[in-house]
Length: 440
Image (cartoon, helix red, strand yellow):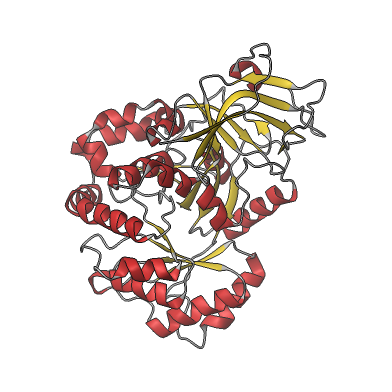
């Protein structure tokens, strides 16, 4: 049950619609103060829903008792809920694959705009060949954290490390250190994947790479595909493990070991189940938020199963077969106390830039994760992993999503977005950011 705290009420102000506020002119030097009245502030870290007014002053959440400026703009949020900005911790941001082998290509800025439209105020790119563009754009953002922006904040690994780049334990420290010095990545991603006899990094080289990243002060996110891969990553001291072993049930002793280690899990449930879900329930393609951020051509490709390529057909089959194993892993890890973080692995079949984080949260809840924990994994706990403020506390740059329904009743209500506050300012969501072209 939600813990609700009553806050001192104030006389009601004149009602301003969200549509009107979104069209406000904001000067580059300083945004006007924004007062969100009668909000229901949902804090997943504290598991509380607080009835309160939220004043945003100079882009930051003001401390209680702060007096608003004379020209404050006021928005009445009666009947609405406010959550911290959403964060997707597993993204490949080049576009949306289509099941007929087509592809909806996107420039980096286009993806970041779609993300923000969906309330995803930041995301972690876990694999790109465009490191120069990505990190340059990220650095420009961080130089101006309060600048008006219609793009989500960028975090990234750049190019992942694997057998192709780390030939031996002796090579790992120098290569990782040089990479960190050059790009200053937010995390290092390591591919450690031995499923079905695949040739991957040997364990000594893998451990050397994790140790080198730690020595450089950078977290490691490890891509795995067997439970032994996960066990090795945990024992090596990785910061997070992404993916599950779909083929087998999680070993009985692994959840306790995982919890004791403090290593986080990024399960990526959307990429491991949603193509099959769309085939079973094509009405999913009619969701208003999805239609606003995926092209008509992309959505249409998912409606015609007879046009699916062999890769898509095979994906549907293994998702149907392995869903139960994935759900069991979520339940057992959660019961053991492992921190589960939300990452959609968007950029793969069955996922859509921006939108699929909402699906990730919902699938985690369906698998057995309590709503509060599913929300935290995409907000406060995700922010903690990135070393980023939550965006809802006094003194922090405001990063908020305004919802028309209570997400603790059903986390699918995160799709019912009424407004987004990013860099302390309302985002203009008057025009859906659907791409004009689709590439093959």
